[in-house]
Length: 240
Image 1 (cartoon, one colour):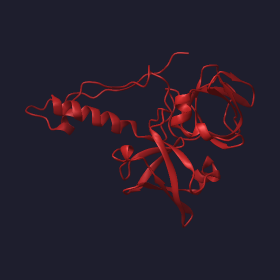
Image 2 (cartoon, one colour; image 1 turned 90 degrees about the horizontal axis):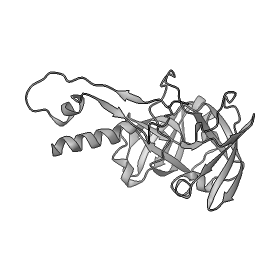
Image 3 (tube, helix red, strand yellow; image 1 turned 60 degrees about the vertical axis):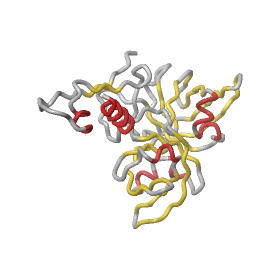
Image 4 (cartoon, one colour; image 1 turned 45 degrees about the vertical axis):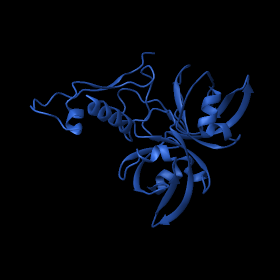
């Protein structure tokens, strides 16, 4: 199956004179987002909630069997990418209601999959197609770090969830920016010295694994991809 490339082209604005760092960014002729050999991307909009059916240790790695729950699954293919709690894994076997995927020791150590228990509720999203709407934000499925649920408070019909984030990631988290938590695209409401806060509407809680997540739970975090590219581009501009 051909793998799509996501490319954003930006034309030069024709302005003369020195460019400020932000102007230099947008004056690039071509800004190409390439993700590990042009792999698939996700949107952070959860398509189904399933469960971990089994895990088997094989030579130090783990082979997972996931029940797909209500995930649309009729045209799945071998080698397809599926995000499990925000972690991109490859389908190596499947039947009508489940699929198997292998996870390396690195993936197990850097994500919550290493501590995922059989029966655990999981968020599922299949890789987006070039024709899909981008309902959330661009998500690679490569987790940047682990966080923790610090508190959950009711706020009218919504809930306010506060998360701890590793110090190395906090610089990329901005108020009203995007962040991916356990595969879910969320908007940051507030940031502080420990992490950040989001507001979850009833639909999000009911239709994701957040319904089975509580205070103290570990969560996978992926920062907005654009933040990393902006940092690199501005850094290169400063050295130019």
